[in-house]
Image 1 (cartoon, rainbow, N blue to C red):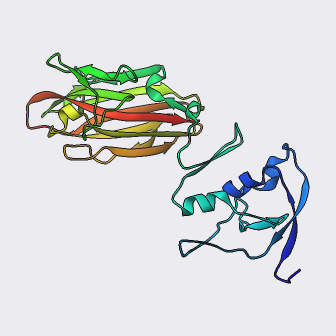
Image 2: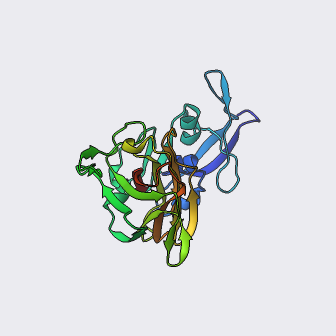
Image 3: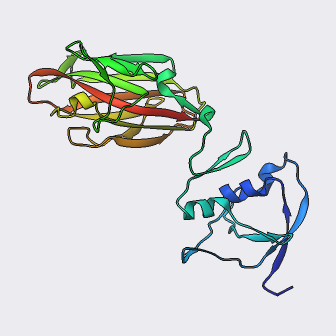
Length: 274
């Protein structure tokens, strides 16, 4: 054997998952395992002429490809990301996903969760929606499909109606801009929240401006850029691990040209991941 080759003892079984997420092999002590010998030979990976660098595991050890029984094994995450694909590990089913995954049972639509609490300034309102209830009735009594500012139909989420004014509202003796908020119990069951915010298609030319704030257990987790006419839907992803209660607050930051009117703000594609 060449001097540059190093033979090490490894625990197999879930070794691929260890390579993907940089986990130490001891993590899988409860899994079926056997002792094997693998060869490290300073293996390099080049994709389309680009030399790919391998990262480190959670213990800070360098991850390297290795050879076992004549087969070369590569870290899946590094390879997947090198070709522009997301890599996910589903610990419940011991499944590796490269690119789009189809584990719909691992996703929950927030709009289907029980509403825990909500409040708003006068005349403002909250509408939750999901298939097949993805329409609303506007102020003129016309039924409209729920679409974002680009005209894309959105099939689940929250629709806030805000009555705006050139003058702040007086709320409990305090000056306050128009707002709507709603709260939901996550009960520490989820890891990530994903969604976007925009003016609804019917109000895409409204001149008022708004902002979204997301709170987890009353701690501010996310503040959006200004939501206004001419802005594409703003996407976001928020870490919600160990969060019991989540709150969405939309408030007006700039008034419209009109004295009093209403605007629909869309929180679309709200998904929770286990």
